[in-house]
Image (spheres, rainbow, N blue to C red):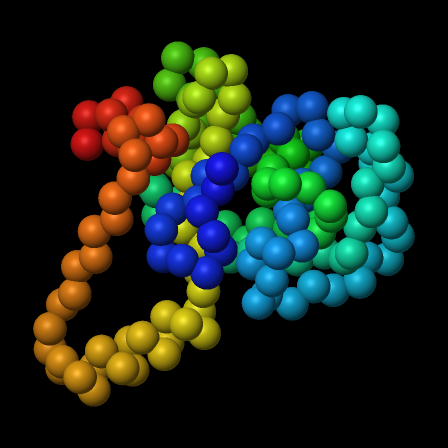
Length: 168
C-alpha cells in the first residue's frame, strides 16, 4: 500500500524492473494536472488484459535522501504507482539491488526499502499548493514557531521496516 498523495506522510513507490513504463492510479495525486499523451502505449497487465490510459502526470517528489525528482507516470487503471526501471535508466538513475539497495543518482545513493523480493523508493510527494497555504496560516497563527509533525505507522509497515533497517 502507498500513502495518499495529499498527505505529508511518506509514499512508497514500487521500483519495477519488468515494467515497460511507469504508471499510477487515476485517483493518486489527482490534484496534479494530467496532460494528454501524444500516443497511447500498447501495454498489458500481468494477466494479458490491455491497460487503459488517461494521460501523463508529473509528480514532484523528495526522496528520504532529500533528492528532488519529478517523476512521470502514465495514469492508468492500476492499484498502486510503480516506477519502471527503464524510465529511471533513461534519466541516468541506476538501480542497485545489492546488499544495500539504492538508486544511484549522480553521486548520490537514494536508499530503497525492500519487502520480500520487491523494492520501493520512499518519497514525500510535494503538494506545493497545500504547503504554501499551511505556511501562510502557520505564519499568521504562530509567527516564529517551528512545528514538528510525527507520523505513526504499524510495526510491520514498509515505513517502519525502513526505519528499522536503517537503525533510525
